[in-house]
Length: 249
Image (cartoon, rainbow, N blue to C red; front, side, top):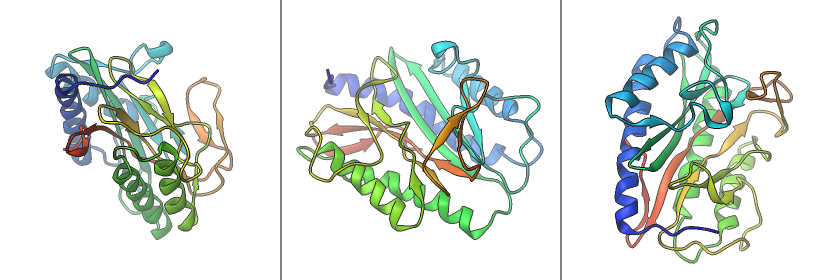
């Protein structure tokens, strides 16, 4: 069942969204060679505590950290570690979820560290572009899988592939609500989008093939072919004024 949010509920979600946005912006200046993925998670935790909010991820199905930090071939759900150092040439995806006022905000950003190839720059750019193209399709009476199809077409037209096993989701008083939002689909199909829906739209895009696997830690998802992956996400609400991104800086 899909819960349509009231104006008041969306207003409450704006606060959790603003916290997530501020942390993502902060990390643009903090992620650099020499820090560890655990250092990133500690920064995230401090900011969340500053706003008297809670991490959406810590303890979620026993996840052991405040954020997911996924590096290079890691697609999503990377576990921060004191032994994993960020290096020049890495791309680092940080996924952050916050609970405030009993409502969740969720977003992800892929950071380029130092010097990377033009191919990797294009991967990151196209992934972010596909997110905003998807959000552009978030309007009343459009079909959900039309949104998904627009993401897929942009990614594949640029020579990359969208991950199939993991998807975006509805969000509200639960971190993961209906509907599921794949990043691929058939245009003109799926449920009709309605005012009051709040969605976490999140393209996960691989440089190589779309297949993934999970490491022995039972969390970290990596590309099956070992090639890099990028990930962007925003929480957006469909209001009377159209789609509003709640996790914008």
